[in-house]
Image 1: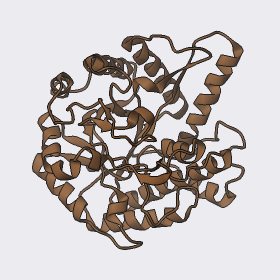
Image 2: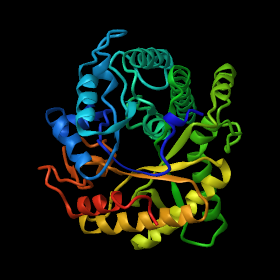
Image 3: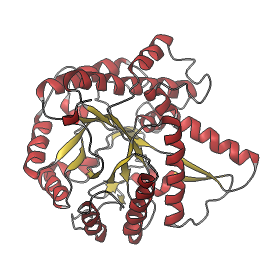
Image 4: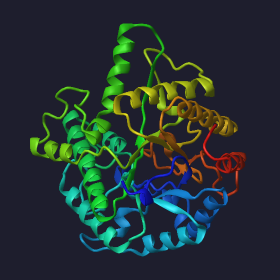
Length: 393
């Protein structure tokens, strides 16, 4: 392990929301572009400076792959050049992200694996051009990308079959691991992950509810099984995937120089076996902490909260959510669990996330430290206070 590239013991971070999947709008395929919706393209320098002003030194950031590679093998580095210049000016170190739910237009979707080689070429070209980055999230939320594209069928491929989901997930995990193999060879860098985190909670004592909880958990953890080289928790799920590809994934499985990313929101906690109770913020965090412990017991890897916000809670609960989550991480750390950071996601409000981007109306999703006019909310000051105080305690 290279100490100079090691991820810190604890990081307070903020992300800039840059999702860009394809969805359907009025019967036609439509590119959701969160950077465009938030006017981040016009305010990149100011937005990054605003993040740094809250006492943050590490930012989760990526520019859209489709803009960096507008034609096959033709790269336009202008947005990346601008982003790195802005990060340098603000004193921010980016956790570099290459793919955030969307592919360039010259690829048909995640199930057709031809995009994997294209992604590897893109990452290789990036590494040749930019020598400084040392922390990477090659693909944001691989499991969610596969789930929404090929299991629920509402993004990108718009296919909803178990076979399609298995193939898309295998392709996405392989691409993520191939990218990290390049990074580790080139500069001994770290994988700092980001992945959706299911927290199923049985609200009845029935055997059926308990079985459903286990089914949801093991299906959601397939993405980690592949990344870490574990036997998949759902038997035979990848039987339709080529054996050679699965062998390649196992050969790339990463076990060190990583901080797994667990993305946890209020909506991550789902009621199983009955209606959702009116859980308090403290209860939601307690469920989250318990599920993190289960996850850590299985994988024994360091982790951070790569995304969190008040998503589905009202604005007046933002500070409470942040405080309770900070206290939950303090409990985990006191118990010897390697919680390495928390990232509020995101700096500003988002758009259409009330419907997982599938109804592109431009509706504001009020989760930002700053509103759409870039005015700070009370949670921004609270985040600044926590960030200045070191790890949660």
